[in-house]
Length: 194
Length: 194
Image (cartoon, rainbow over all chains, first blue to last red; front, side):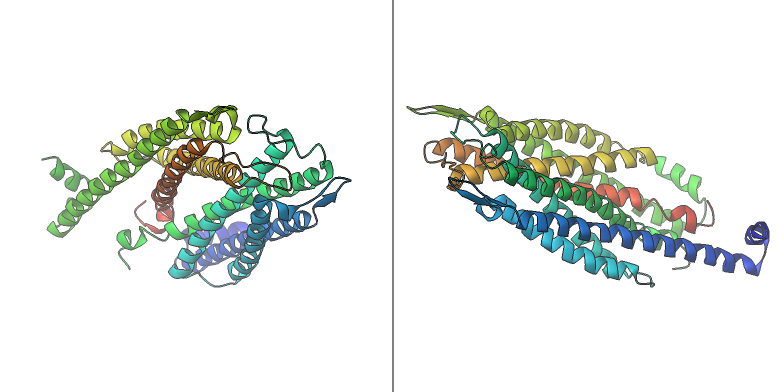
């Protein structure tokens, strides 16, 4: 019975450590799968945002507009590509059933932080361009582009919204990687056995 | 002496521990001052960027342009104001000579993360607008505004550069606050005396 196991874990002598260890291993394996899944989500999101933006072009009777005409959208495509590639590699490494080393924890922490900032920046500038394309700015005589290129703006908006969901995933991932890194610290100071 | 009290309270034991404790206290006080200084820097930077942007307006023979005509610059001013206020309060709290509680660590962590993302987003969108104002975009018939408003663009660039330095400070601060939060974890699982 499960109850008995718990009892042994709490009161028993030699069995205590082993059962505690098993629990911890189960816990770790669950956390590992959860982390790998979380790291896989940006792959799908970034690829979706990237493809949507890549295919975004519209031609009307006067002119033709494509994502590549706007620097912010080109940057969004590049960053989404980089993030998708990194997230895939990171998910594979995170799924491996072995304890991560200190240098791995630092590497994950560093890249997670940098890519979170990169993708947030890309989503922010793309939103700004969309805002200007939608509203224009009369003071500096920038006309609204979405009046003539409605379809283009819709697709671009969808791509930016998906990128923002990826930003949320990244924010969560960078919290997890900083937890995994920094919870390793302090330990050498406190534990007498190391 | 106050120092003795702390020693007796924690270990009451050998001289080795007491010396270690003294070292740790010195270390902590040094770290506290360093953190308070680091948290004060964005106050100065954000106020400088804010004032520079607020005073940024230019009138030529054809038109007049002020920061308030551009949404991105208004957003930059607001975020810089919020960050300056928060950083000042946070610096004062961080400088207080008492151990931080778990809820304080979580609060610092949360606000540091959110404000880092906010100020990074503000700096990114302002950069994008500056880029468009400098280069324009011929495909969607946006003219270069900096040709007619050179002085305006220079001041705005200075403000954005200062904001980016504040972003660097914030990135560092959010690493420190996540270290302070997460290094507290793991301890209850490992230490036998708690």
